[in-house]
Amino acid sequence: MSSTELGTRPGGGMFAFVQRWISAIVVAPSFAASLFFVYGFILWTLYMSFSNSRMLPSYQFAGLDGYRKMIEASRFSVSFENLFIFGGLFIVVAMVLGCLLAVLLDQRIRAEGVLRTIYLYPMAISFIVTGVAWKWILTPDIGIERFMHEMGFANFRFDWIQDTDMVIYTLVIAAVWQASGFVMAMVLAALRGVDQEIIKAAYLDGASLPRIYLGIIIPSVRPVFVSAFVILMHLAVKSFDLVVALTNGGPGFQSSLPANFMYEMTFRRNQINVGSASAIFMLGIVIAIIVPYLYSELRERKR
Amino acid sequence: MSELANLPGTGGRGHAIGRFVIYAVLILFAFYFLAPLGIMVSTSLKTLAETRTQSLISLPREISFDAWKTAWDSACIGVDCRGLAPYFKNSLLLVVPAVTISSLLGALNGFALTKFRFRGANVIFAMMLFGSFIPFQVVILPMAQTLGKLGLTGDNSTYGLIFVHIVYGLAFTTLFFRNYYVSVPDELVKAATIDGAGFFTIFWRIMLPISPPIIVVTVIWQFTQIWNDFLFGATFTSGPQQPLTVALNNLVNTSTGVKMYNVDMAGAIIAALPTLLVYIIAGKYFVRGLTAGSVKG
Image (cartoon, rainbow over all chains, first blue to last red; front, side, top):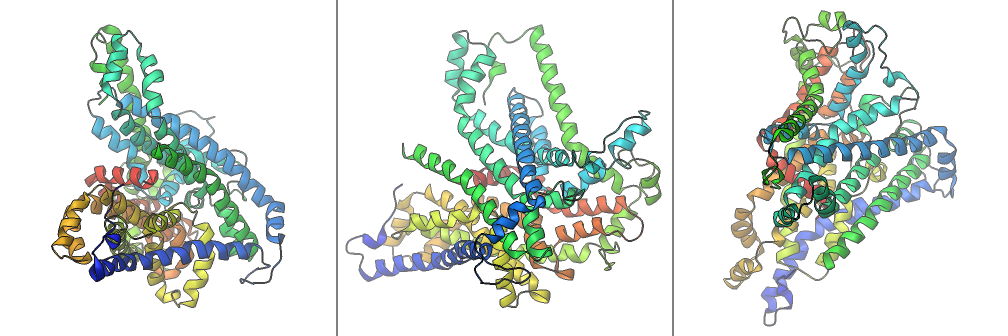
């Protein structure tokens, strides 16, 4: 990366100094905002998680009390377990579906533009809208179940949204619907970037189509898989709105995710320390995903 | 394009069947992705009576726009029966300044961080970038406290929410512009500097005129993010100040009286329409923002 280090240019003098100063001044407010509202607030939340804050923030130190209460809360263990079920399934299904659609769309499809638009549009709308639509579609007495009854399948049952064991899968259905098109768009862009000469050469050497995909194309779009994976994971950890709109965490708290747990504890149950502990916990998960990713990205680029 | 289908020797009958299967699968999935929108639209066009006599999935027997009108100006959100219109306006009044200011600041930051580099510019950028990764749950409690201290709650909470969206949008807007400006040749700026142009002159006369593509990407990204936000809106605003997403959720969960599914669906479409229109009109830029915003440089 080349750049004009104007300030260090010999003979720049006062003018260059002012130039450099202006540049730093321009960035300063944003940087200060980031220091305070991102880093400062994280430390603030961290401190809250070690305090005995209940309804109002308190600055009295209470050690790991908040974390202990968090771990003991059955609402938390359910939310945590849900994150693994939801996150795992959502990521796998969205990735597989997204890749499948991308590979199929890459076969010189006639109405490719239209199909792409259709697959990706859910990404433009709010999780609240998605939640509302799927909520009524999945509700047995007005949605799919009733429709099947009307079609004459009297014994058809599809009441996951009211079933404590199955409700978490309804979140997967809606989230996959929303995000698969995004994976498709990323993978398709990567497929288009693969060197056509290599593919042609392999083909002339007698390699079969699946072999070309497995041997040449997939390895060269691997970085995009990693990016998509990280983004979906990030999306899963932050999921909040979708749960609120689709199930509101219910029945009971069976479909609650950590973000919902955090909100519930902090703003509704007067357990600020427990809520803060769970926020820190969420940050921990995100850092555990993002840091190795960024590290490998930066290393790739330096090479 | 990877034109595998174009390679010699892939014709023939097996090929035709293969093509048919590919199209069949693609069209099947198109139905899957369109179905919820179709059901939303069809339900919103039903009369209330019809939503109760059959499932939402069946098509309306007669078309009625009553649900749209109700959702817009008379549906009850809690005890407030003014429909979604006031909240639509809230979101609009929120999104315009928040998008404008965060995009402008992002452009200035991106310019400063690439073309007038100062010592530590990279570190500062990396530190700011971190803000785009955090789960916002980790900042909302301190933010609620701070907004309370600043008096940006209650009737002033729209200003508070604008402020929040600007602060947490900066990481993205700066990222977008920085990555765009990095590829602009330094010579352009150097020449102007030698001619005696200052920071803002160069920004205004040279950088902005070449920025429309990235401005469109950034504005679309910010617009979508802020319009669709729920967490900040639900946390920092109350009652009549709430943005549309929060009002929609409250509308759907208002349990007094008869459940009006047709109104819920009409409301959901109203909330989705602005971003959907942007997506349909400027899809290319939308996709570019998605990939740029997610790959993070």
